[in-house]
Length: 111
Image 1 (cartoon, rainbow, N blue to C red):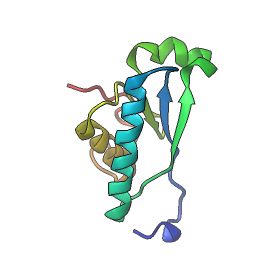
Image 2: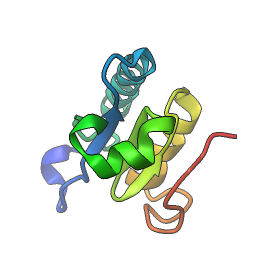
Image 3: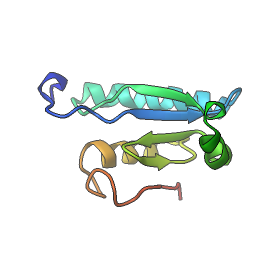
């Protein structure tokens, strides 16, 4: 799908990260590669925004033990470390996959 023809904007894709978190750095590289794959396949690929949990007291309290965390349209994927769950999370939130593109599963956890 041509991004210019999209009638509604994509939700922000947020990577919540901690300072000095090498797993967060790995997650950023993996998510960037997956977003590039989606763009090549003409699938919706939002820009990746990074947020530090240290800048948000609530995020630090709730996310510290499960970073890196991806957030898309109010849904979260804690421990976003593997390609399969990240791809499924993006498909679910952007392509109308299982869960209807959003609200039914606010938190997905890796099995």
